Amino acid sequence: DAGVTQSPTHLIKTRGQQVTLRCSPKSGHDTVSWYQQALGQGPQFIFQYYEEEERQRGNFPDRFSGHQFPNYSSELNVNALLLGDSALYLCASSSLERTDTQYFGPGTRLTVL
Amino acid sequence: SQQGEEDPQALSIQEGENATMNCSYKTSINNLQWYRQNSGRGLVHLILIRSNEREKHSGRLRVTLDTSKKSSSLLITASRAADTASYFCATDGNDYKLSFGAGTTVTVRA
Image 1 (cartoon, rainbow over the protein chains, first blue to last red):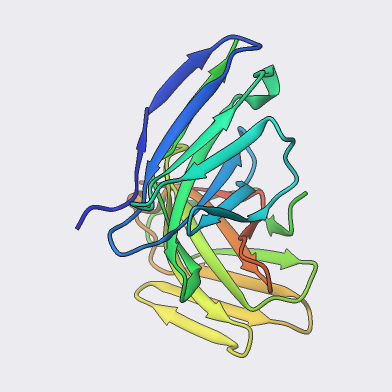
Image 2: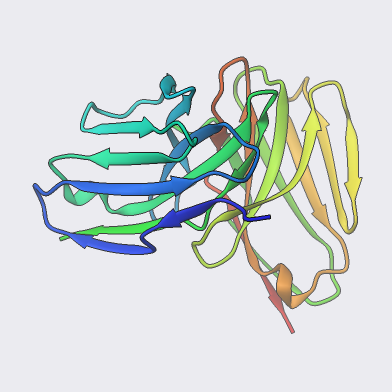
């Protein structure tokens, strides 16, 4: 049973560029959440998707957007990258009945130069 | 902003010793969870304790929760080198998100 997968593992971009990160949830899960973890900090909630709709959003600017597909996989898009967007981006999946228990993927390390 | 704060920020112990770390949070919660993270990679779920529970055990892990003090503790007994990692507490309320603290970095010396 595959767990949560994310791609790519690492990514290097320059300021002003756009980036798309991808996540496939654990089998049987229909809800995907995204978190940003800066170096030395805990993860910060970006948003959560269920039934292809954004259900809840954290304190992140509109440059951060997402999408969920009918197969429950998800993308995180960040436009106009800033140096401060450099972080580990974590995807977590859960089932609607148990959103308290989230299973995390290995993350995508984004470096903005 | 972080909902929780872990204490201490860093902990260094000898293999075989116990490790204790604490978490304080600010608002009312439904559940509190502890996660482990190795070398800046993905988070591994360790244990969940509900707001109406006071103590929970899982293998070498013991978690306590005091909702009147808005605090929790994680005890790892008989530590091993493989326990070297960062440990985070996370709370969830009536919304869908997990709110994490800044973590405790644990180093277990051989």
